[in-house]
Image (cartoon, rainbow, N blue to C red; front, side, top):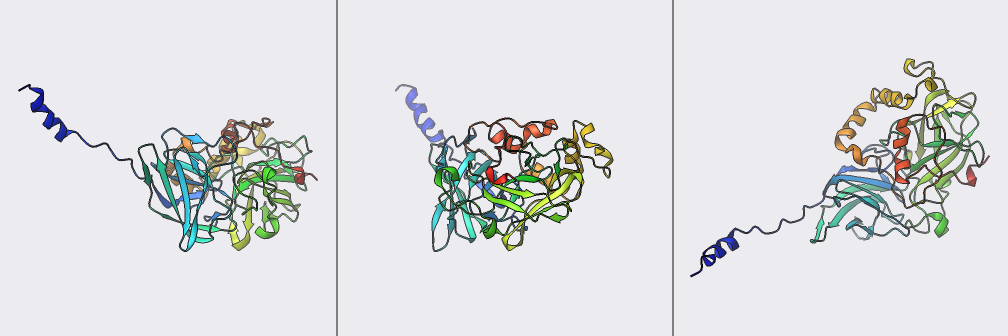
Length: 373
């Protein structure tokens, strides 16, 4: 008898079955607003209808990151599907815009059920689908988050000073805003739109100004902005919101004047900063020995980040730094969009790592006509 017949049964017995795909795993506290990163169970930690949210986890997507490349956005991206469910109501698919093994960015549908719901992620790598366990999420009408230069929800806000329709520089220590000037603040979470989330409002004709419904308040340097010209979806982007407001005359001057937003239900955003000065150009900050004058240092943004890490936000920031891989941080808002013009007067190298800038492969777009004044 040939010798191979002796080994064949042994090989059949010892051959291991193919490894099953790991199941996606994430927790309630790893579902956050894509701008603020405020965790669940804290004020501002809920996910608003129509907002961009982020899920951090393991085995929740492909090893090779993928992003949506065109409108309309689809319910499945590179094998990843996200479903929002509530007992007694039809399940609603979220719209993924970026997926990877450890991070998903998606738009919460404007039709998602309000209140306690569950999120379930399914990833099909070609060997069959693997589903996560349902994870609780709180869906609300509005819960705003401000995008920041650090890409972590703290530090200088992504905002533009309105000088003219053709001149809207990025707010920074070298290009400060003035009291009485219009500023455009970028974030996500003002609320739902009518007309669908899979395309930008400019294509759908969606109702995007949600200022009255969301009861938007903007606070800058300890003073409430009395004039809000526009608060709602940015016309050229799905899920991205902007607030065009006038800096109040009582706002505190400084390179890192706090800015935050309050919406309906008492939901408060993360606290970011704006540079505010008496005159155009660089700000000064006499109370901060590291930053007086701020424009004297090319590393002013890094100094700000250092100061913030020492503040009350520091512990939360360090926790996120351990929990979220740094390589994933710039991928906050991967939206299909042609590259707009680059920003001027970039104050320091940290702004070149802006989540928005990386996401659009360029700078954020200029505000619409509503920002003119």
